[in-house]
Length: 190
Image (cartoon, rainbow, N blue to C red; front, top):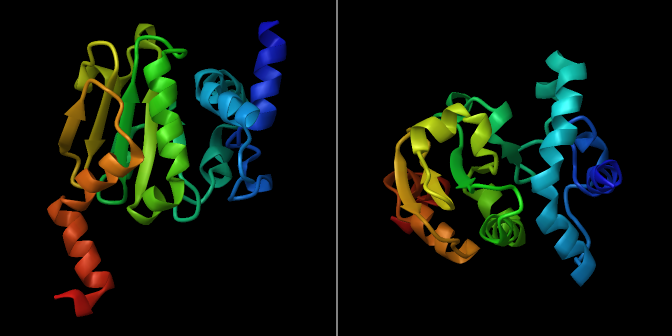
């Protein structure tokens, strides 16, 4: 049964090795697809871990373009330092991969994916405390946690409850670096 579930979710979610073949935008989700997508990140790391073990050097080339598609990355496989001065990081952590708060937060991020891409965001999730990822050691969550790390590597916001996509974007838009970026892109706003 677990193998069947893994195969179903691997077919639904863009796995880094297959991400180049998947379209950048999803069709309007129906109720079943939303539930499957919400449950996806909890099981997708197992599939990507197998792919990472076989591909190794091809992982960087296989990742989708973060300027086009919002990336959802497993904390166990990522070094956060790769994103410093390049991307903002929304960190979502929970005690289990099936935590309803984790799934709700990831779904809220997916619903506004284009807006987060515009703000240079990547999402890093961790639902496996037993693995004790480096990010988990630094953040030390107690149960569920959502945090935002700005491009300078500093944790700017942290909350023990899910936030809507709109709330997260409002927090990001108040960051000094984000304000500077907006002024550089739209100089007429000065």
